[in-house]
Length: 423
Image 1 (cartoon, rainbow, N blue to C red):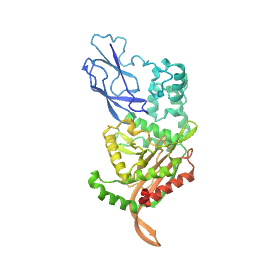
Image 2 (cartoon, one colour):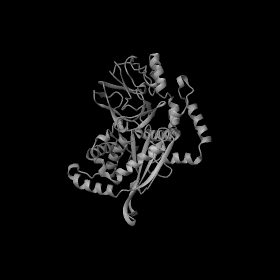
Image 3 (cartoon, one colour):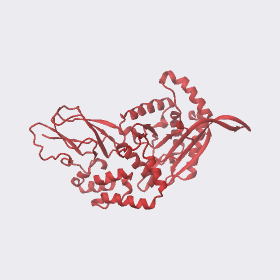
Image 4 (cartoon, rainbow, N blue to C red):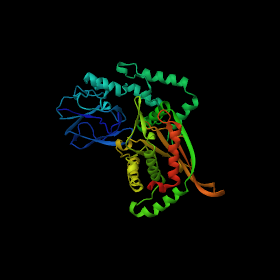
């Protein structure tokens, strides 16, 4: 009996993955639990284990292939099993697992090949909730840095084809100023490259470009900046480093404190902890703060869940663990999704202020500049104080300027007097 190995959905938001490396060869004997291949999602590189015992009869896709989730990628069975119906390099039999209309399901779990096998009610739901696009359209969109959510499909059921993406690119080329296109292109490369080197816009890099372009095109982004006194924040961090050094085994960072501060501010200003869903603004009950991290695979955002319910010590432990896994490529996709607010810092590079791009579907992001000793006026005298810049980018569709400014004021208050976190 032939067992079809599928490209699994490693997380709720994953819709496609890249076969990074096959760890088995054709006709090799495998047991349940043996690792078959490595898959790269938009978040991490993970191993896929065999769910069956037998021999690897055929590998249907080569390394480097980008495929929708639930695509059949390999066949496991007995050596005498007939596999003539499976052509190398093509998808095997479409996933036809019966889906009951009474059982909840996630539309993104259904491959495009399997849409036609669903009951009509579920087929309509897939069409509503999932972006249907041909493989060529997806490839061109990745190459051009275009978010498929912005493209109107002309195929059956609104399916996006290659011509739709090319038409969208042509329209944008006429409508977008060259300076904006150059900015997007510059932002799409974060790693040092050798002169003349060509790097594929694929995997994490492609997803980052797609998400950044989608954010730039769809949000009404406004950025507020403020300079504040971080002297007390520096003092508190120094004190906590001394007090918690033995129990933690590492030093408390400014990011640990800022996660706690932003979580508290979000609890006080819940309209910044919201997102657009369809034609509605949804106010979120839970506060999950993400921290943008530079890794060898690109920009990732590990998330501290329920950050408003945690102390600084617990936040420090959790964020270090998930950041370490992210940098090693061992994070599960669910550890890198579901955030309700993001913090991104460039202070370590000597940057004072910048306008960060909102991490969709969130409605706001805080950019953190460097802390440096500068002259300031205190009680009519010029003294040396630790000064800091913060930049809050928010989606004006969701939040107006005054509520956003009050939220930034609250963050400023907590940075200047961190003891207020205890109140």
